[in-house]
Figure 1 (spheres, helix red, strand yellow):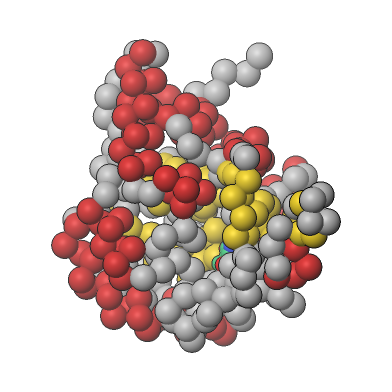
Figure 2: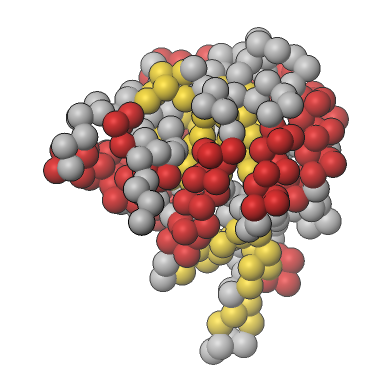
Length: 308
Ligand SMILES: C=Cc1c(C(=O)O)[nH]c(=O)[nH]c1=O
C-alpha cells in the first residue's frame, strides 16, 4: 500500500520519520538519518548558542520507555544553518527544530532559517527540561504572543511542537490560538514533563538534573499522544497537518496514530534505543497491517477511528 503522505504541503515518501531529540544533534547523526529509511531528517532543537546540556546521568532507559532531562544540548543554530546544504543530497524533507530560550531567540532563529534549505521549521513550545524555564505551551498568553512574533516572516512553513494537554478546555484554547496564525502543522506530543522515577535500591531518582524530575517518554505516554492527536484533529482545520509522536515502536503503534488522524508519525525513544533500523521495520510492519486490513493507501485509514 502507499505509505506516502503530504504534511504541511510537503511530500513525505513514507509515514515514519525521526522525532527531534534522539541521535540528531551532530552532522554525522543527520547524515545517518539521511541514509536511513526515515522519511525526513529532523534536527535536535537548537538554541542561539551551543549548549552542553544538563549534568549526567540525564537519560535513563526504563522497561516501557525512558525518562530524560537532557537540557537542550545542541551545536547552536548557526551550525545547523551551515550543514543544511550538505543534507539536501538525501532528497527527503529537512525539518529544523528550534527551541529558543525566549521569544526573541525564537524570532532571531526563525528569521535566520527563512532563506535556508529547511523544508519545515518545527518550533518547540514544550521543552520541559531547562531549569527555570516553564513549558511555553502551558502558558496560553505567552503561546499567543510567541506565535504572533514568529509567524511574521511568511515564506518558510512553520509548525509547533506541543506539550501534552489533559483537559478539553486546554485542547480548545490551544486550537483557537493556533487558528489565528499561519501555522502549517503541529507535532503532538512532547515528553510528559516533570515526572519522577525513583530507584528503591539506591533510594534516589534515576537522573540527576532537577532533583530527578524529567520528561517521560515511550510506551507509557502513547495513550496521551493518541488523545492529543485525535482531539486536535477534530478541533483544527484540515489545512493544519498533525505529526503524531509518543510511544511509537511498531507498525501497530503507527497505525493507531493513523486512525487517530496523524498525517505522519515521529519516532524518538525507539530510535534512541534501536537506531535507524527502526524506521524500515516500523514502515514494513505498518504496510503489512494496511494490506491485511485492505487499506490501499494511508489516506483510507487516516482519522478512520470507529467509535463504539
Ligand atoms: C528541546 C528540549 C527537550 C528535551 C531536552 O533537551 O531535555 N527533552 C525533551 O523531552 N523534550 C524537549 O523538547
